[in-house]
Amino acid sequence: MRYSQFSQRAARWAGAAAALAGACLLSGCVWFDGPQSTLVPEGPVARDQLRIFYVTCWVTLFIFVVVGSVLAYAMVRFRARSEADEHAAPPDQGHGNPMVEVSLIGASVFALVIIAVPTLKGIWYSFDVPEDEKANAYEITATGYQWWFKFEYTGETAQTLDPTGKPASAPLTTGNELVIPAGRPVRIALRAVDVIHSFWIPKLAGKVDMIPNRANHLWIEADKPGYFWGQCAEFCGESHAVMRFRVIALGPREFNEWLNNQMAPARRAEAVPGKPKPQFAAYRTFRQNEAGYTDAFEASPLDAWRRQQKPDDAEDTDLIAKGRALFQSKTCVSCHTIRGDGAVGVTGPELTHVGARTTIAGGLLENNRDELHRWIHNPGAVKPGNKMWVSGYLLNNIKLTPEDEDALVSYLRSLK
Ligand code: CUA
Image (cartoon, rainbow, N blue to C red; front, side, top):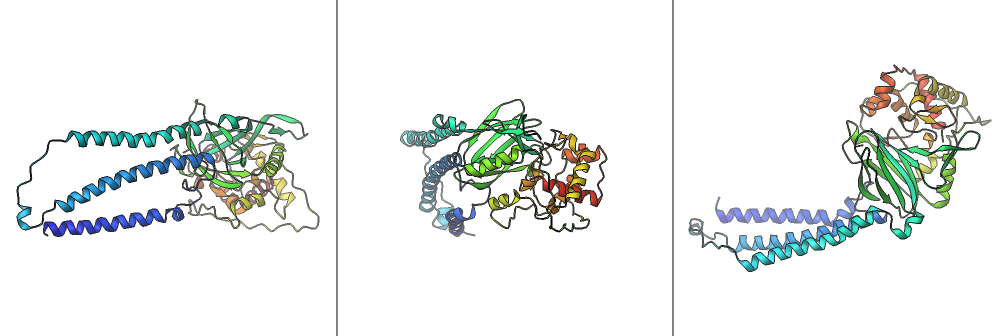
């Protein structure tokens, strides 16, 4: 192939690649809005971080265009135009030009300053709640475990109640679903008990590491009520990829309603006269590690969360009571807390109101009867290496019959 033919072909390919990249960029706003998109932020911290990203992108795009144009010009202007050119001796070689070199250094420094100013401002801004909003900030402590998140409502008046209605000493604690007030800064203290995790809610703020024996923090704010996806963003063992959580932002009235309900001890399902007892499905077998860990809600995620706060239509109180007894006899109580039902373990997530969450198993599975069955039937198949399986089921030789599973599922579902 002749030199000039080759360069023409190369130029054509380069043109096609540039057009494709342009099309991707132009349609990016449509393509890149998923539940974990950082390009469609829904709070001031994430918005500020996106602004820095754009400044960096524009500066580097400018440099790319300038350097690319000079390169393209040189390729076209000085290409070999004939057979004789291809074999000609190279032209005289230069030995640097002080003017060009000084300008290049100056331009590079200038480009770095343009990026550094908003970056430094952004680092200060995202570090902590702005002074004038500090008094209004809500305080929460998030702790990373292999492989789930604990949330403690350490600030304000979130006080758990014992069964007699008196305040208990422990702060209100939830697992894997963080409910926050919308339109209000939330300061989150970050802790870890085992290994390094990283706390990340892409639509609300960038990630910050949770490190054992080190007190980190970050702050977030949701513009309006919504349902946000979060995940661990630091490799922390075999189930790191499925260590997820959710953030639910609520308006002030709904948030207080939620808070009041959470402070109460475990709910007791009551027999509703006239309502038929439900027919429970027979034993189900679940394929191990099957795909389809899904977040496919029929309604909007926030509406699905709201629906989840209400008790199931038909509750079998006998089955629920059997489930409660099983929860105690099968040693579940030594790892989980269910306030008011005699479960006080702190190794696993607190479950006092687990039925009101949209997800189970560290934000991995949707919280419905089928997925609860699948989870308690064989937790190790869903989340490899987890403590409930390894130190719970295997160590204590826990065996559940299909009827046991039905009862436990009914009990957990009733904890609204
Ligand atoms: Cu925790 Cu990755």
